[in-house]
Image (cartoon, rainbow over all chains, first blue to last red; front, side, top):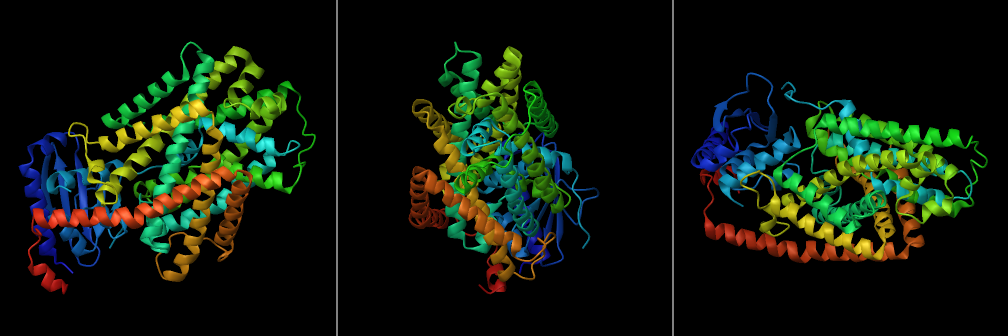
Length: 118
Length: 455
């Protein structure tokens, strides 16, 4: 089981990877989304905000309703955002549950692919 | 913890339109006259309504599975939990291959219709134009909006009912032999092929992640199947009442013959518009489903990594989309030269029956395996409905195999190839990925986690 701090660390690593990728920022310029990341086994919630191509990570829930809700056990979330596993594997076995539009879910996977590779 | 609401959610109207819209296609009319061809009297309605009723049992099974596991991964995940991952993957790959066949049959039927309306343009040109248009749409990332889908589907349903009533009024129709099926085997075959009329109603389950409650998907599916049952029944009776059955069953474009018979050139224009509308949604949805499946399979190292390449400009899985373009055009070309589109239609009907039987079995297995899992929707009356789904759809698949042995041959061959691929090739791809990954980089997550996790 991962801790809240470890998930925060993984999201920061994800955010740093995103910041380094200029192309990704340009591609997401028109994709403004609020993503809630929830751990199913520990009390841990984070919010990813994409606005004008910039990504910010905050702890806790968003002010309004999110566009996407990503839920998984803490271990999976930490591994996922550190890029040690692809989102598709836990998604296909049901460990990772994402609520939101299918297009947004695919876009999130694309972003992960571009940050961490295959 | 309170339930989080999403900014955008889909309504029941769009869920019904999506479920019914994916089902309504050019090749469904071919299947509808095939249903009539198996029966002696005016009993096509009976076979279609029976097919619809049976599909409702499958819809109930999908509702329970979807409520329990609300994921766009659909059958891949349901079957993996119920049976095992290898079975789920084998069946999913085969199912996607059959859908590719349906796309091929669909483009052929549509090309024949457009060629009939504009004979100067050969069908092959239409096939290429359609594939190029839909491929370009998918590579660029253009999507049909929900409102557009709603308008097309409800407009189409209304048009089909209107055309049917015009036809029935013209011939002052009276049911002469409404229950005359001509024998039990004819009825079984008619119902089996009738299942094809509803192929795709369950493709709405990936929307589970976009609705407020999974019950909306269940209601949407049931409503769509119910509405379609009535519309198909009325339309098929209308067609067979006005056009000789032999002229319809021998043609890949029965709906156009029917429209021309009752309304002349206006009917042709009307039907070409309807068919184009019906096909574009099914065609596009099929292409999106298969391309995403290919992309996701590459991402989980089931297919070579090349299939997970994405367009840096449009954020779309262009290699997966382009692969479907190549395979789709190849299938359509083969169908164009052999005219054996019915094999694909029957293969889809058999495959769909197998999927519905497996969905029923998955409900039963999961109730035993995970009796305390959260089920927002549970089919009433215990095991009766899933049991009926397993037995009836297995019989229907067998009926298709007995009547069309080549369908059995192709599906068995496909199953063997998929099983071989999953058991022999997939482990090699996964091994290669692991070796490449270990050589390329160390685990990013700080090692402290592994000791804490105890692994």
